[in-house]
Length: 562
Image 1 (cartoon, rainbow, N blue to C red):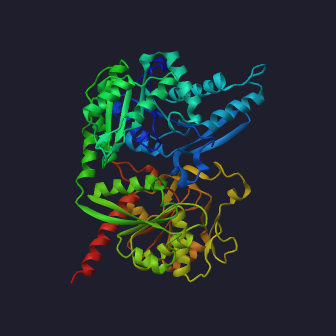
Image 2: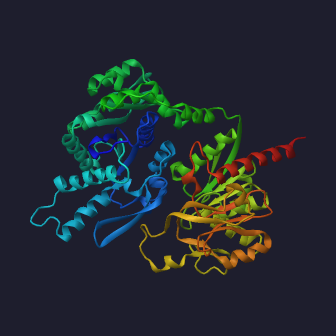
Image 3: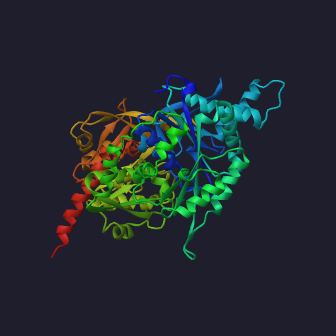
């Protein structure tokens, strides 16, 4: 463990050619290489958009919003503050790879940087000076980076992923700040990793390196020379392509690293180890060379490769056109499946198109479980309610997450309690049976950003419930992100027909989970258990769902055999 700030090494990860090529997984995998060698790490993600945080972004546009356990009070000036628990989805990848919980301050956005500078100017921090991108914005960026080195224990290595693509206007101040920072602390303390796409043209049977060459040239024009070029491609690059990239990008051939498509993302650190990337980074940074201890990680990867069964989980929802909208859920299902020896096949159902019970009965007729997804707003809601209804009637294993739990409760109210018109006031403010309503403290705020019930909260589980048996604990901590909640007076009446509250908050006033007692597996939770799932430690709820789905598949198979 480093004892001084001036001992911490920095790894910057940039991207080229196009976005979405896996910088987040690459950054997490590089962090894992240092962990294999016993070095401590911390990861920062820079997002160039002007939002303070991603909390108000559309999941279809940006993917899921990851929620941290801790809430950070971002205070650009003394009397002005924002509470932040919502951060970029890449932090889910970082947490799953490293096993470390992220802090909200590790996600730096342009919105945070410019807010700090502009409000600082209004407060008089720059009296007599013209406030400019250089040096005032770049100084603020560097300050935020160093703040992440010094907070808590000082890490051996700070990794900084810069979002977007080299050449984007929004990213320019951040890349300039990196150039200044490298100049200030010395080249021997920094590694610059550039992740780029190398397309394969099947018509000519050849990898094309020109986009990578142009991308690196763009980076060089900004005063930044990459030390390592990681090449995303359909398959492993041939030596000729690697040699050409090394020659034109001014890096040694051994520093051109192939990153082909793989079926298990957790295999990537091991792929990098086979190409000696860990040793290359350690030597470049002048760190002590150590034998990587990767046996435990190899065992995790093997668990994903030796699955002998398959279960199908339906995911009815409203953001299914972009699977990254449910990134952590997808991974949590995979974690549970690996432990159970089951490959999880996800059946996506867009509930705006498939909305009535008849078509949902058809859609769910060949699945082994249903996960009703989180979300907001009225689009696609009737389809989600119909899916929950079908799961109730046909005893299909069911897990509702946040909005999914709320709409599952609406389904029970309508179908079992026969409360016609039961709904959430998020959709129908005039419902005769508002079984879901806005939380009291939410009714007094009009701001949308960072004002929900967010972050980690205590969950007190009712003894003797199915939830209690899954956790085998009475009190746990989970991460929340909601404005609306289940209303006690309606849930207590539903208890006569076997839907009961199975968890509350610390005050006993907020219902955190519900379940149906006479159903093999029907649970809804107000929180997001997927954010705590890890490849070696699947969350108990997801593990319970997969086990129930496997049992349901067995029962269903025996019923249709001649």
